[in-house]
Every structure is written in structure tokens, then in C-alpha cells.
Amino acid sequence: MLDYLIRGATVVDGTGARPIVTDVGVKDGRVAVVGSVDESAATILDAAGLVLSPGFIDSHTHFDAQLVWDGLATPSNLHGVTTTVNGGCGFTLAPLRATDAPYMLPMFAAVEGMPPEALRAGVEQRWESFEEYLKVVEGTVAVNVAFYVGHSALRHYVMGDAALEREASAAEVGAMVELLHGGLEAGGLGFSTTLSHAHYDDIGRPVGSRLAGRDEMIALSKAVGEHEGTTISLAAQGASDRFSSDEFDLFLSMSVAAQRPLLWNQLLFHAGEQERVDFQLSLSKAAAKAGGQILAFFLPWDPPMLLSLNNARTQLRFLPGIGELLKLPYAERVEVLQDRSTRQRLAKEADSPAAGVQRPYAAFERYRIGTTFSPENEGLTGRLVGEVASERGDEPFSTLVDIALRDELRTEFWAARGGTDADWAARSEYFDDPNILFGGSDAGAHVDFRCGAAFTTSFMADVLRGRRFMSLEAAIHHITGRTADILNLRERGRIAEGFFADLVLFDPETIDSSTPETLCDLPAGAPRLVATSTGIARVLVNGVETVVDGVATGATPGSVLRSNQDTVTRPFQQN
Image (cartoon, rainbow, N blue to C red; front, side):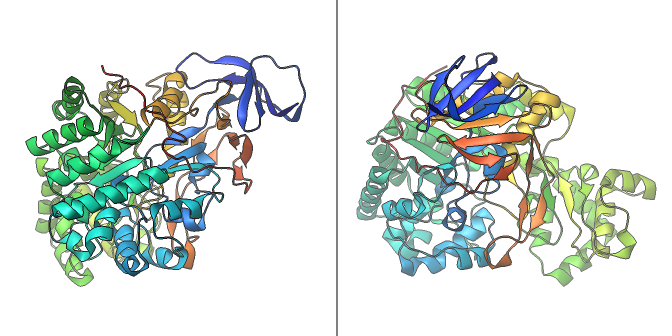
């Protein structure tokens, strides 16, 4: 007898094949049969009219800290996600000595946008080594979880505060390599690092990995290649504009040294940026010729960003002029913003080539007004800044500033990076590029101004009922089977006999994400943005229901996915 039988679903199997209407039976945590089923089952579900796909794989998340107190991985679990890959950008909570936690936790909070009070209250450190951390998480999670071994953690463990001051000595590099081997032997999915100039610790110093020399990077990459089914993940400075020749050469050499895929975070563009995008993707072609493989994370969805002139951690900090403004004390910021000529200068600087890939955030007319706080702003919630500016006969940025000043700069504005039809048409030309990997949601991070966990359901809604730039089977293939293959995951990402029963059943007419709302549900009552899902009928992880009609069951059948045990090295698929 089967444990679970789903009858008459429209099955999209994760391979890119066209959907078929059939039955799927589950037994002992795996798919037992795909096809017409006559036998009985402990649970039988009529799924006529619903789509059954493999569980969604979110390939770049930061739940490392949250999982210590929230094994459900909320709210990703509600959006059909059955596997999260954590520890990107070199930021992990292991290896970690207790004496180093006073530095590492605030650093983690700063670079990944997590309330420090939540980390202080919620992270009870019961580990030191990477292996001990995995054991703490094992058996407590509702989704499958994999973890990179983070470069900043390795550097600080070996070098202490010197990791923030200089390159490592040969002996220190050797110690890091041995420590990395230990993490990979324990099951680390690979090695992650960052060279991005956006990554600073809580007092403004570059994080440790940004001081690493070439020899250190290559030595760590070679260590990755000595372990089965591993990858390298990194945040690149060149993602914000174009790779320098040094970056280009380093990343190519790292992938070749490891003989493993290198994934960089992340490819961003809007209409008119094709030349830069093609240059960035030329790195992949150069790697293929040299015998490596390099792919770019690419998020086919614009997460709505909650921005304000009172929050210095949002995307506004990357805009020239406005970034410097946000560093000023409140009183000075208000004084500067009251000058109309200064507003004009700030708007012009923000919308200049110097803004790079963040320039779309200078389209202030497309900002939608969120929560307001003063009687003078009553009735503005939900309106576009551009509409209000037209009524007032003023410029959009000046109008935005007037609204914010009346709210003591607390006004909330919603914006997306590239929301025009031209932007999406330009992006869609790259959806089938073999050198991109759909991902980069950052779920679990930057929780005060974005909710990346909504990536999967928002993407499905767009594919089915929005812009429809690709077929349903192609979209599902991107975030299931193809992602599993690139990450070298074993027997995940497909609906096939013998594969693990990670499944999501959804209504194609209603699948979507809600608008994120601020909830104070983190430890110490700290706030975060949370979006729920619609149209998710069931989520199964390893054959066990974890979500029923959009509500978590509380079950924790997820596994810690370990390299070698749960991965297999696959040959590069060069294009």
C-alpha cells in the first residue's frame, strides 16, 4: 500500500517536458509510481485541475541563523520551497568559537540585514565546528537544507581580528584549507566567498574575505575540487558594473582549479544594458574554453523593496548622492533635504551612469507610497509618486521628499528595480541562456526591506497569468531539475520513480504571493517583512505534508543535504 496518492494532477516533472495528467504515488519518502495507479494508499488526494511539480529549490538563501530558532524556514516553506541553499557570500555561523561570536553575529546581521537583537536572543550557540552546526540543525527542519562553508568564518577562525587587516600568510592559508576540508567532509555543499564592496561589518570595515589574496582563493578552490559534488558560490564586485581584468582572471582560475561550477551573484540588468550583460556572460564562455564552468545567478522576478529616507540599509544607499545623504544624522539629513536645489542635484546624481545597476531605483515616479504617519499625508497610501507629483506640479523626487519630511522621514515607499515592459522584454531574451541559474532570492536576509521568499510563487504567477515570457514547464525546470543538476544534488528536482518525494501541488489560477507585511515575530519581537502565499494546496518534503492549503503543518521531515552523501559530481554541460 502506498503512503500517499495524488490522483489526476497535471504533472510537470521538472525535466522541461510538457505536462501530463496522471497519478503520482509516494512510499517511504520517495516517488514510487508515476502513472495510472490502482492500489490503495493511506492518504488519497484528488488533484484534478491542480499542477503537481517537484518542490522548488531556492539556490541562494541566508537562513543560517533563523534555522536555529525556526526550523520551518518561514515564509519560504509557504511558497512551495522544499530545499534551501544557505551560507552564500562567505557568511556562515560555523566554524565559530564562542569567543568570536561577539564579532561574527553583529557582522552577520550587518551584511545580511537581520535585526541584531533577534540574533542575540535567538542564536544560542551550541556548536563550534561546521559539523557540529549541521548536527544542531539536523532533525529540526521542515525543508531540506544545504550549507556552504563560508570564507569569512574560515578567515576569522584562523586569523582572528587580523582577518580584517591583511592578506593571510602561507601557514594561515594552509590552516584555512584544512578547516575547509573538514567542513566539506562533514557535508558542506561547497565554498562561498565575497569580493563585493557592498559587504562591510557592523562598524564599516570590509569583511575578511575582501582582503584575501589570489593564492588564498586558488588554494581554497582546489580544496573544493577534492570533494564529491561540490560547488563554489561568490558575490562579485563586477556584478554592479563589469568585471575587472583581475576578477575575470581570478574567477576563471578558481573554477578551473576546482573543476567545479562557480556561481556568481548576481546578474542584474534592465533595458539598454545588453552590452554590459553580454560582457559579464563572456566570463562563462571563457571558462568553458579553459575547462571550467561559471554561471550567473539570475532572479526572474523583481522583489518589491520597502524604502525610506530613514533607513540607511536599503537599496537607496547605492545611489550616488543619496547614499551619502543617508549616512548623515537625522537633523542634518532633514536640513539638507529642505533645500530644493539640493533635491535637484540628488535626483540628477541618482539617475547617472555612476549608479550602475542600481540606477532603476532613481525612477522615483514609479515608487508607490506605502504607510504614512502624518495627517498631511492621509490618503496617499497606494498612490504612485509620479501621479502625486503631476498633481502638485513638482518633480517626483522633490514630491517624495515633501511627503517624507511630513512624516519625519518615516514614510514607506515600495519600489522594484525594473518594472517596465521594456525591462522585462530585455530580460526575457536571456531566460534560456545556458550560463545563468535562476536564483538569488536572499530569502532570510535583508528582512526589513524585502521578502525574497516570495520569489517562487510570484514567478509562477507571472509565468501563468502575467507576462508569460516562458512556458510553465520551462519555468518549473529552471527552479527544480536544472537547479538540482547544477548544484549536483542527487535524486532531487524531478518527479520520477525513485526520486525523493519533494512535491508542490498548486492551483495555476491562483498561485501567487501576498504583498509583504511587517510582522514583529522574530526573537526579541524584532520586525521583518513577511509574505504569505495563495494557491498552494500541498507541499510535501520527503513524502510528508509540510503545508496544507497554505498553512504549515508543523512537521519537520527535512534533511540536511550533505556533499558526497546527497550530491554527485556531474560533467560540465558546456555550451
